[in-house]
Image (cartoon, rainbow, N blue to C red; front, side):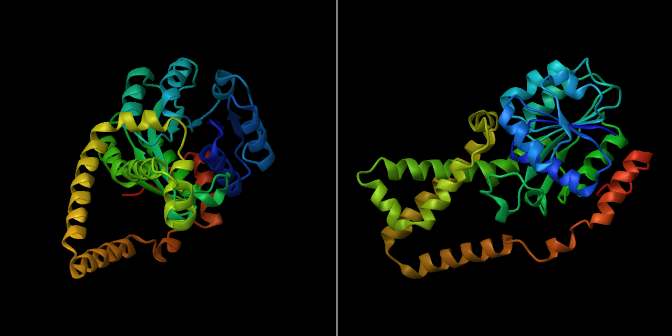
Length: 314
């Protein structure tokens, strides 16, 4: 069993670290055009070796993990399509899935299996910029599966998610992109609007120092944008526009409440929103879903022996 990670950013390197923490039996190859990222991955122990040439890094791989900006995925699939061994499983991590799934269906031969993936980090990990296996603990690993995907590829994808400490969740590409629009892209657009509004006013730096943490939360979202965020936003524009329209209506309602000057109405709305946030907060039960080190080792032994299927979520 050979694994290649193409793209050694924070997520790609964290995947390598989590895999190596789970088992030392599987060699992990790395590829990235950035020599500093390759050096960091080697120094941290996320990969065993690297190759500067994409094809050479991937041609013997059984599993290929793509941690790439959206604008490079299509050309990477084109470069790899005739160079991979039969049965190779490719899993990507792009935050939008519809264009990626279309490219995979159009470009890859039937001998190569593709599963769309997206790692959504737990709330306490957001803003962490250094790779770590801890980033993936309790994360949700969304998996988007084409119709022609075989059972083995499904098992590889779900076992991978479990091994790195995440929770695999199967979802359709359309549903996934709608969820991401609400949970990730709308907050990003709101943060962009807030920061642009504040910085256009005179003395905005002084205001930023006064308000401190609340405005800093908006800055954190923008500072930690993944590469090619604009491409991802444009690829998911239909879903984002739906949520932006709803957000604009809500802002109008909030403005009206301020103009009315009735504290009871505003208090009720604030408390309702607070309760909603508390309901969405991580629960202790998430800890119970953690996969033990022994289970992780067992999962990957099953991959070596070909005994798959026991860990696939329903």
